Length: 397
Image (cartoon, rainbow, N blue to C red; front, side, top):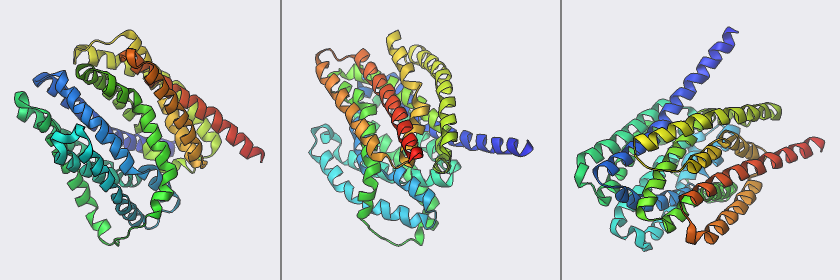
């Protein structure tokens, strides 16, 4: 009994430390957005959102399945981890060229060309260290990094205050990301010093089964925002992005309970995973009620923004299945069903695109929320039944 209690306390410490680190960044960005709106306007925040949406989409392409591919590789082959990681990083670096060309030739980045390219490069570096931090559970480092990052954001916007504009916002983001990148590089420098410089482009092919569901998942998750970026006014886009940022914060909290133990997840038996999934359904409902209530209070009383009860209801529907969805995705990877995840995600993306194009004349906030909640529920249901079918067939065989 005492041993189980010690084990439980140890897990809670890990979850708390990881969760605190992961929550600081989205919380810092929410404060960042609040201060920009306070000092200037929702329109300025909307203008920055237009750029940030595409920067982070390009970043997903640069990742090329980095996190999921390496986490599984580290778990199954724990020797020579830093060499594997560095080889993958250097091999992915070749993708920086086409990504930079996209920014150069896109009119959206014309006024902030060089700062956006440098910002993307620093994001690429920081992103690469996330899988190392997660695998070695260096959550104190993550916590310090996020504190530096968020502090730089907040200090930067307070420094500019009433004179803040789009250029200064991007510069602040660049500096904050740079601080985090320097911290991570310095911390892991000695452990990477002995690794040899090696480029193996074949790892891109091996990462492809992880990249395709990741990019499709990103598009599926954010396509409502992409349509909003196209059809909404700058003001409505800024307002909608604030609400979505809160939902992302809610999703981040969910990962507190799962990500620190993903390297052990691939070793769990199916019956144990199924029990966890059922428990997470109940947990999702309670969490959904609590989080939606908090979101309503923040949106209404802090940001002073107006959303309908339908918007909050669809936000609740979106949040509830997230616990189960994360487990299902990793269980699909465990059973080497990445291709199936890609097919399902691609099908849902096609449905979302069809819906958006049909509704483009009347695409508003309600439609954006509906699109987001619908896709989340549908993909969770499909993965649940498909995975159960696969496991039954596998057991019979």
